[in-house]
Length: 274
Image (cartoon, rainbow, N blue to C red; front, side, top):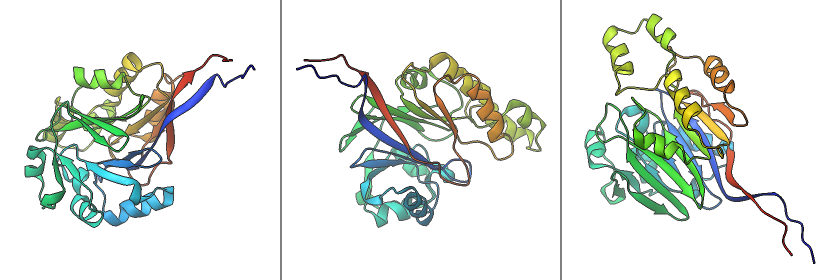
């Protein structure tokens, strides 16, 4: 008997959301139906809980926290959130040493470059990034063949970033500043140099170059992240990327509110079977 199957089949779904993205706090959710991780905890425990509740996401699904680096906007809520929910914290020793507060010792898990860690059905691969922090890392989260990258706070696009970006079905990608807005801003010279000096942040143009030249054909969502409050504009960067997006959905992750939850999956073409 002939069974006509759908030409496109969703499998290995991942659900992603930015709970907050910017210099005032960063926190990203990636999970499947049963387990999830948070990448960075730069907003308070209470605010994290409120935003997840509004999105219909359960803290009971969160099984681990991964920390990219020690800057306050990435770790502000770490101590309280990890202790309240007994969440293991994957963090490099250098990053831990740079934190200004204590993380419960029994919750600390070592993190190193090019390491892949299993969290239930999820696999989280870490790799070094270029940023002015101690042992800063980016992450690629996989569930089966579906992959989501969290790539923020990057001074330059290294080979490792390009390699992992090319695998992504969706990614959080930093678009921190517009060159013209930053050049005309009231920021002091030393701060402008820090941002643009190769160990600070990605500009809109730098991020666009990564997207245009290295995005895989299977990418469906790009979440533009860590926008500067003073040196960028959500409408400007959304318009810039939309011109080149094709079928990729472009989302600007806000520094004020959470995004919606996006469902990410690999689309598998199937032939008819008997």
